[in-house]
Image 1 (cartoon, helix red, strand yellow):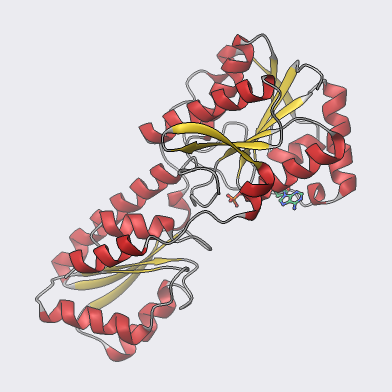
Image 2 (cartoon, rainbow, N blue to C red; image 1 turned 90 degrees about the vertical axis):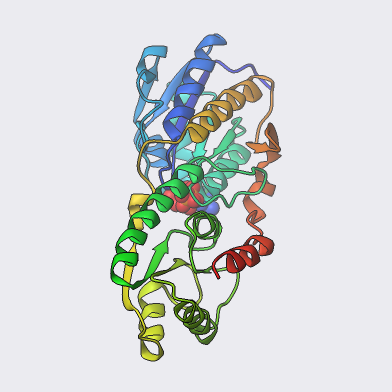
Length: 327
Ligand code: ATP
């Protein structure tokens, strides 16, 4: 493989806290190792529209503590076509960019894998998504911050729930993965947790809530991942209300606030480690891989494996424990 001179870094898909720490690490590691680094704005859309900025060590000052992504992100339909990718590649060639560090989720990885295979440009991807659902990394960038944000919200909801004898249904992000719901549910002391990976019958849920009421619980919180098969928090609340009216029932959808906010120390360290490792791996001649954290070590996983394997396996023991601890 030809030696690398200019590395392009970009964020794509959903934003996640910790992306800025990663951008900073890519820029500074690249420069330290004698490479030029270019920031590509708005992901693949920016690659097609030539939104390139030369970066230096000072251009990433004061960003490690910021949520979101200073390079902005986007979803780009054109990049899904060969013509779109060809145009993007030509723009990279014109700008002298000869290697890429994409930061995003499995969609971003699919695009990077195709571009790299079709045009032979080296890529090392970084898992940046709050869902924590990428194979090859115990944690994805942003998951820790998002879960802490959910817990903070649950704590606040608990105050008002307990003051009014209320039952709250709190919907959290996770279309395909119940990771945020499960962990935030355990940490927030939820009375029940509904996940995409496991169907919960409404009658069973009502039975559990009735037991709570009989044991003099002054409030109940049910966490529902948005991908739960019962159809979301409003639906579940409506169906529960038809048969169970011991508590005043309320619904809170946490929505996009889960994406934002100051990254936790964990996500800042993770973003830094992954960005640093991505650049070092590229320079060492690696390509079409994802950097990931496994057992507190940075390891590489084949991009194709990272794309095709779903990583979050429901921790049944954690769910069982949550049920027992909520009696
Ligand atoms: P998140 O997990 O936060 O949703 P993501 O990276 O999976 O992040 P997507 O919207 O799925 O987000 O993908 C981001 C972008 O990657 C898409 O807008 C598109 O430009 C590109 N992309 C996704 N899938 C493909 C594909 N199969 N081929 C080419 N490009 C793709």
